[in-house]
Length: 224
Ligand SMILES: Nc1ncnc2c1ncn2[C@@H]1O[C@H](COP(=O)(O)OP(=O)(O)OP(=O)(O)O)[C@@H](O)[C@H]1O
Ligand SMILES: [Mg+2]
Image 1 (cartoon, rainbow, N blue to C red):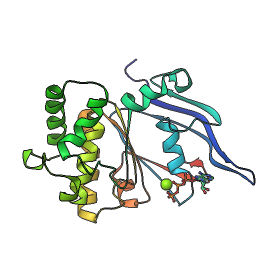
Image 2: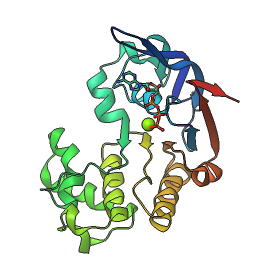
Image 3: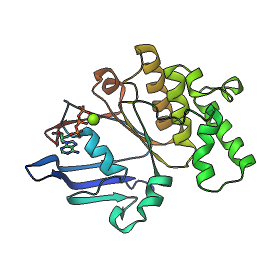
């Protein structure tokens, strides 16, 4: 089943409910994501982009509809394992551990999995190389790195888990144009050369223009 979508969403809806009101943030969203492609999800502020992302990474559960990973309903999967090993989320503000070096940051998910330090180190070094950071960066703390370099460390940390889906919420939001373009080209290469399914939420139309597929959200609905 080589051509099965890696992530399928079927009429997925999500409502935020509180005492006073109900907000339908995602409204019957259906789409199939495939490996090897770079997707951009765009839409105005409040259109449901981040909510959709949190459903895809399993941080929230759809109010209605079904999400399937490689054909399996997320509801029937171990969600901790799904979040740890099948999907990786990259944040706008990098979210690195300030007291860990670049190399230690990348090794951290492996440590959680109980991997031997020597093996973890080799794997982490390999991923840092993939994002263009050589050994001169290993021992630097996040505060000693530029924003673009920090985001590259964050991407390397996302890669080390072995997940095949990379999701990012405004990954270039805190970067200047040059660093932003750099991050976009790294993410694009990961999709095209290493067959990741890369899904980037952005209001940056330039990113959207280089994506293989661009999805637009309006009021939680996919507009085609
Ligand atoms: N915790 C929450 N409780 C109630 N409503 C929420 C909550 N989080 C988001 N919403 C609402 O859900 C809708 C979608 O929000 P979401 O954060 O997904 O939008 P977004 O497209 O990511 O926006 P932005 O571009 O500003 O990040 C908005 O109307 C928002 O007000
Ligand atoms: Mg958002």
